[in-house]
Image (cartoon, rainbow, N blue to C red):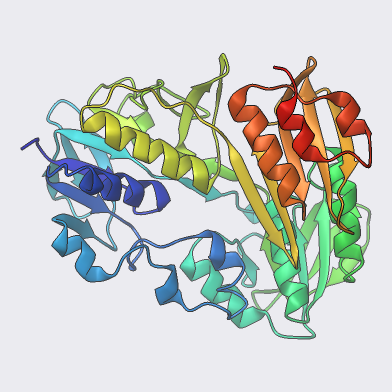
Length: 408
């Protein structure tokens, strides 16, 4: 039997690594270390169905408690690692105790960016949306008729806006950039999503930043915006991105860039230590990226499990993402980084559309808005390395299935 695998992080990647190893009949001792006080759970529904009260927390758990004992997986909750001692192959816990490992897996994820204290980030009523505790706190605030300011017009902010409107709140979204989704999507996608929110009475103010929050008795009551206006509010949701949790790796002397640097096998600069999920910077298409997605966390962790069990295949990411807002499903295949051309195609169903991304003439990604056919077709094209026929994309009456017959 191989020596102990210690997994730091009890999120999507950490659990997927342990579960896949057991599926592969690998019987090495496994210890998962998680800072939260609950068993590993799905995070995407937290900010949607769980926050809306449509799903109870027990339904979010990956496995019931007995699964861990049944599969010889030790899970330590409400605790965390303070230090990695690479020379001794030990992790030092916050209480000073140590745990030895043969292999260490860092699945520490990412943490939301917080508002600086100088602008009122310390006030009560200022929230982020990342874990169960965040969702529980937000749920208590989301009551019909209340006023919420959402800072950030990315996917997190827009998803929070959709939930708040569904629960009857007055919603204002501010985005400092020229438009919503500036960092992650094309103008065409942003234009569609903006209309979807405005049709539901969400106020979206672009090119507008936060100057400061105003408090009363320690609780936020208003926001002074960069355009000089002041907005009376009851609470704030901050959705301005995340940063990788790479402190342990940095302090242990591992290579760190935009996250913990790993090779195509998810190995860090120490061959006994792997990193995966939101905290890892990995090679992709001749460059390096950090993928913030459930899909990558699971796929990369499962690839590591196969490698640890004796496999030799490198991890080759096939990125896909999704965002649910109201009754709208936005599905994304590929990664649009560096795109220089887009094609908008309206779908056969009313309200459906897709945006196709190209970089130096090569197809790299598709956004599909309520258009599952466009998403599935685009994903298959990317996986097969087939370039879509531009004439078919340009023809509003053309069936997207014809694209799969295009020459590569």
